[in-house]
Amino acid sequence: MEYKVAALYKFTPIEDIPALRAEIYAFAEKNVPSICGTLLLAPEGINGTIAAHPTDMDKMVEYLDNRLRVKDSDKACEFKYSHASEQPFNRFKVRPKKELITLRKPEADPNKFVGEYVEAEDWNDLINDPEVLLIDTRNDYETKVGIFDGAVDPDMKVFTEFPDWVEENLDPEKHKKVAMFCTGGIRCEKASSYMLAHGFENVYHLKGGILKYLEAIPADQSKWKGECFVFDQRVSVKHGLEEGDWKVCHACREPLSAEDTKRPEYENGISCHHCKDNLTPERERALRSRQKHYAEKYGEQ
Image 1 (cartoon, one colour):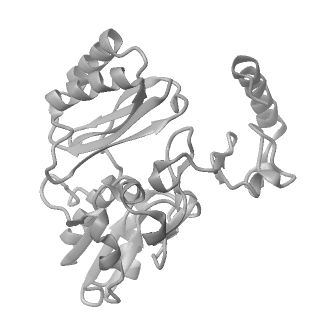
Image 2 (tube, rainbow, N blue to C red; image 1 turned 90 degrees about the vertical axis):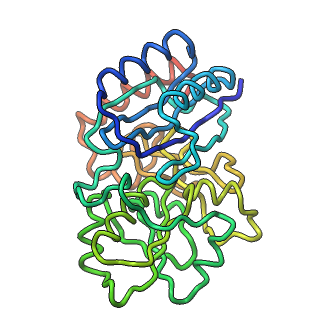
């Protein structure tokens, strides 16, 4: 059976996270047995991606919408569906966090102010403006799978590097128009809020992120190059949100192209060219044991 995948976030104050976490678990256990994925709860809101059989997903989404209005069309909120041929997650988790997206900059508060949203249908016109500086706010392992034509890649290992990169490379007096994008939109909520707090005036971000763009814009009109990395077992998606061709190294979690999997360093579940040289005998034994377990359980080779 095909799985329905829901990616969502909403910045809204949550006061009693332990109580809400217990409530969500109780509802899921009783009403949605096929649910898997992760929901994050923080004082600033909810974020996550979950997957379930379509009827189960409808029940879960209705509950979350009644509880937190996750399908509202207001600011600092996004909700979208996609599909997967197999369950892309192993289990269901509801995790408490200090921030939905860790930036460690309290002045970046999407519940107070964010940049200007740009719909996917208007994105090409914006980024064609020569005065607009286009910035990818994702991490380096994501940008190598795909990126917008002409975008600046800050080459970040983690999102917490973004403020330092802005301070070292951007100037509110020089960069009058800044447009940003990320996978689903949530990182740009924090990034745009941070930049507004530091004097940048015309800050734009892609509403719904790359996923909405790939869903709405035909490939022959697209300025997107490559595929989009996603944080589940699909690894990447293409235009129309079709499942992509990239894989991921189960040892180091680096995305791998079809060419990468043909390299001599690649062994499914064990190593790739990113991690082969650092593979200790102890780590290799552990990986081979895990891969043997997967092969026996799921028929993977």
